[in-house]
Image (cartoon, rainbow, N blue to C red):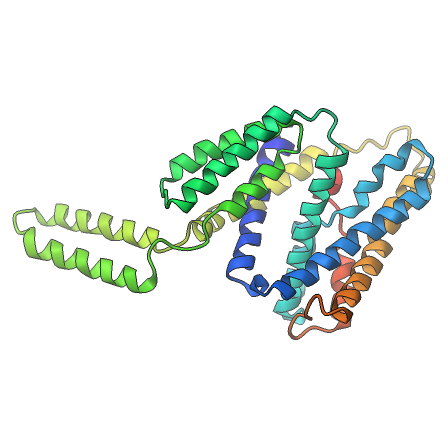
Length: 326
């Protein structure tokens, strides 16, 4: 529980930051460019779920239809990274956006269909606290301590509501400001003013104190010239990738093979539903819905990519791990 409901919030917070960055500053600023991976992700969720249900309809295992819906962001993007320049940058972005939309959809499915005891008071409390953060951001509150404290209470409220606590991480990531307090021109002006003022009226200050005071002022100006989104993403990404995800994998990989017939397990309706849903369902669903989106003019093709890239990326979307385990 500490790993799944606590540490994984950091992972999904970083995911939320990545979504926000691409929507505000990246190639997904164009609504049609953002729509294509979202529509493709929808196909990659519906078709695998239907395949699973076709194998398990009428059985106790039928409720597991949500398992093959989710793409694992870390593994899918990691495999693409291994291919290097052979995969166009726009194709990598398409897969990242698809996996993010896929995971948000899968987490929403968990919240709606796999939550046993929903506490509306706690859920409303969490939403109100998110509104407080949004209002503080709109009023240019810059104190990070305030956001950390309220953010922890948001996580606790969502956790107590019965909805999966990782949703709090995504929501907080999406609320993180993507713009810097000072523009490049303002940074230059502020820095020059600081240096001019200090050199003009600080003749009685010892040299070392003068330098330290000046450096602190310049550091504050420089810090506020970088957006909170960028600062947090740079700070948390290594912890998320190299600590949280490995711990999650080890904590959830409690597979016991004793007294299990591997042959029966591999041919069971659950195994077939999950494996065929992830392997064939993702390829067919994502490619089909991408084709529909292009034909209907709802999305635009990523620059420098072709249908072979889409089919290959949709195959990688069939790597189900993190949210599938949830």
